[in-house]
Image (cartoon, chains in turn red, cyan):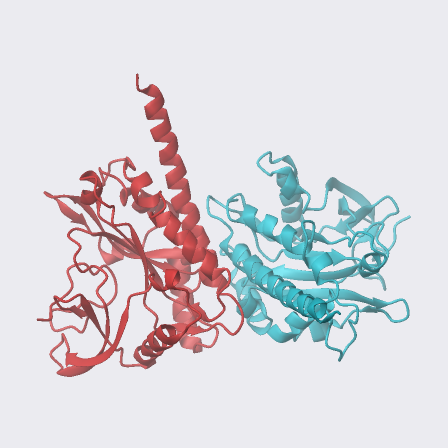
Length: 290
Length: 290
């Protein structure tokens, strides 16, 4: 049984006769191949990445597993269409908080058409990409059983300033992630910090990007995922980093992906600052304990 | 006595009635203030940088010392004009090999005028900036007492491809740095390598750029300097990294300079590869020794 994913925060969404990705109960994610060359480019990337023996296993885990392509009934009722079959990275998760972050101060690649470059250039300038080296493209943050998720409108997200971005990254790891409240960053050390936390994972990715010259990842997203309820119950935080969206990946040709790396380092700095800041708060609090 | 510098490889050059920097015998470098706002912006940068107590000393050494501004006779005969008084970083050097590398895939800052952005955008695309995250803006490489320096024409430098850049970075540390000869990379381990070498210095800078959010350095250059003759004589290699040209520095506003950092990491990758490659050669050669 194919169905519309519960936890999609960005990109084209299926439903109401629209074309979008679908999932099944076995943990597969079916992404329709985009009709222009983006579809074939993403297939090319996954095929080439899967078979490339130079990708270390500890890096491979940041990418959804690829199971080939398949003709399935498209969500818009247009009949059987080719889809990428990928790992459903949210399969088995109950209430995941998710932030989709498009990395890079520019989302266009030098070989692109002038029209495409112009379109991306304008978007990168208007959004936070140019200033921060990344932008938030979608998010859902779990608040509570009663109020469910905070999932702001696309239009609101498109207006995010540097300060809004900082606030979202703090709400992501707070127990009081409600609008108008100063986020308490309670879960910073468990979700961002620690050896398996988001920061450690981003630093592992960064180290690879300092050396790898195989691919340049334009317009690709880092997904940050966690489960706040699990932290409360003292189970695993489910903190996970995944890379998605490879329709604009090009060959590295012997040069590192300085555009992606710069943006990734900028994101890392934002996360480290929140972590350091919350450490200071925790230290202060424990000093005040009797 | 003011005179035209012996070792200038990029930028406006004094002489023939043209305005350019001058040096004296006491180790000072006099840079005329550019008449548009670039001059005042560079003074502002040096003043602000000098007085900023958040700059660690081990980072300060990468910047020319600033001695204020002074009215001196301009090189173009236009009378007394305001000049920045800086440390002459080549003072006391005999035959320095120098590469001037403009860092960043873009040389323009978001707040610049549309005309300026357009001009830089075209240049960054034509030159290697967009592809590599940096470009070579000038160079002189010492060949021998007989033939002196290899100092290619500006027009030739502007056409440098990724492969040309790689070749220049290899000629910089070779004993046979002549045109048409495969560079032997003899001095790689002494000039690029070692605890005081170019790579170690670049990595130190990189570490600072991963954290500092005070300044964003657009259109700023990394100078790499060395003295090959000294290496031959088993004296210090004089390997030195300096940052110069701060007419387009803007405030960081709490974000790291991801544009500079990305380009710097790309340069570091080029240098590391040459070093690793030459290590392999040396290891092979010593294995072949009886």
